[in-house]
Image 1: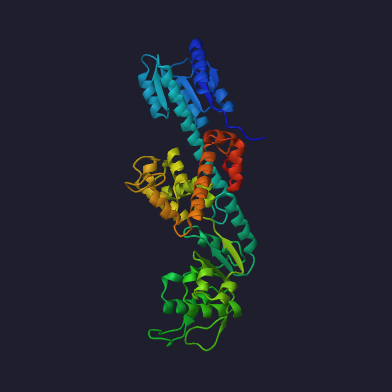
Image 2: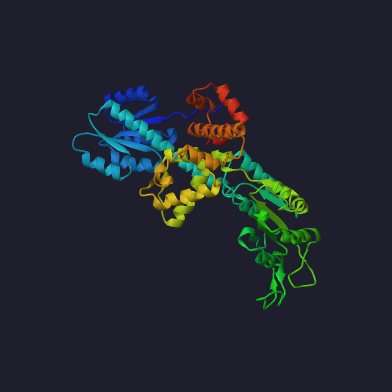
Length: 473
């Protein structure tokens, strides 16, 4: 049976029976909420312990436990509940103190019915946001950080399962994916789950080193091998003996070094520069690339025999657009990291900010999202991150202009028909993820918001690989 949206609950507390009846009828009719009434703070606390209201609307001057003490006990019970104070003549000072103690809003009797209904609706939204953020935090604790991965989408789960299967092997693994998708993280996961985890993994940033330096760094050299070689030096392969070496962005390795690397993979031995003898090494080789190696082979820029030696096993890291339903979880993860790093403990996202993150195209994938959250934490003026905190001045906070979207998704190299399908597919996946996030995975409610039949939305979900259960708390 499909899970239904959680019913919103309002608890009304007042020692005047007529006021309780009036408010109960008003809120039930105008807000569509479930309402319970209590004639004392003591009775209200008993109800709140088991019923768990979203909003509490309470008088402040009552016999026994007054409104201020009641709110303190209520917030000790549930810090996410939003409270609204009703005040009579001569209790304004108490209302101000209640706001300082954490009350959401207050009204002076007699009050306007429409205004109090609006306040209740906004208070419900606040409670929903606080509880969703708490759920995100708890998910991070629950799922964090199995070998460093954050995410619950189908593709991330599949990648993690594949890495677990490959980790015990000694075989070479080629990790592919766009820039910023976490290829080095996948390599570290493979190493940490292997029997070699007790030794440090060696990472080589291949494009960062010129050809001559790269060769000497990888394989080492003997004293006098070249000008400046005034002593013997062990290379990185020898340093990685008994461990793992990651050749990051291997597509940029010069052909001359590709030949020597092939020997390492075939013979399990290295020959330092200026040395006539070889040295056996026990190194597991991992390689990563964001380039099309098949195309480079056709151009003669990458050795075919090396490609097949590297591509014994392959892992493809998904782009952020393919795991868009993980964006809120990733954003919350990065928020906690950078709040800790920059000493800003009380920051949180407003719902509109998370929705904008879901709508934006992410050319730089997870790395771009990470940098965006870092910038927002540094520059946010208040305690809530807004859509405008997520972009540079003058940019559209949610989607950018049309030119930006096309550039960021890099569709211009495709034929028009293919490019159109790619753009529409990306939009549809993001749109469905967005509406399911808002409706907590409830397909019927999401379909109503989309203005389509439930079956039509389900067909789109099947076509684009979106599963409702991934959006449910």
